[in-house]
Image 1 (cartoon, rainbow, N blue to C red):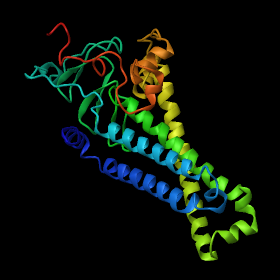
Image 2: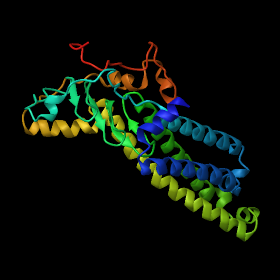
Image 3: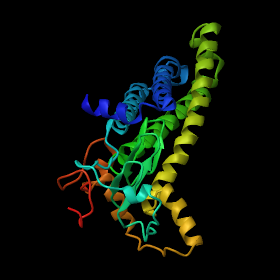
Image 4: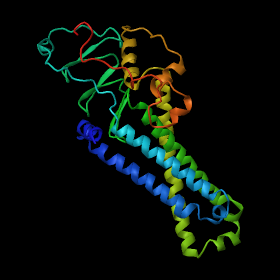
Length: 296
């Protein structure tokens, strides 16, 4: 409950963020209903011994999808803590010249939070806080995607794409299977009105699967690329500007497996598929104090 209240407090001013999760749950709920009530009862599938397996497997995917989405929504993305005592930032307001940022590994000052922020942290204009290794603010989870919840967000994308692919495959199997194409199979499916209702739901489900499947696949690919290149979209934009000004050189890149383990945990790779911490070491990620070490 405390996590839910904190998430609502961080992003409660985003009306799109309140609507998109609702649309997600409605879309997932309709897909589950359409598969169970209108796709699996098709003649090509209901007589197959695999029909109970398809029902159980699809509902398992939906359950994992919802669990990962809930974790991404409720988890702390890595909000930078504010200092207990106020820090004097009067020089920022006086218009005094500021030292340029030397690299993305340095501590910086956020004049909106009026606090120091650790390396690779960015300020979210919707949450009104700085977030560690912020990727972007996602309305579909009504939260930022940051250092501590990026794993759950990627898992949500993975299971959403898998559910879309599974649902589309079931619809095509129901239509293209031998029993589905034969006149006897169509007659065995019930009256004409019932067949028309099932066909309508199958068409809607197929369109929904293709649309959301393509959407989450693109976002999933973008997330994986940002991890293995060790650059968030915000950092890519900033580095592009810095390169034009010749102010920052390339940063040594870590091995791809190391970068993936920093996000998904250092446990077994199979554990990366489940919405819980699979790190073999204590802690959920790097922790920072509200001040740089020279001020602590």
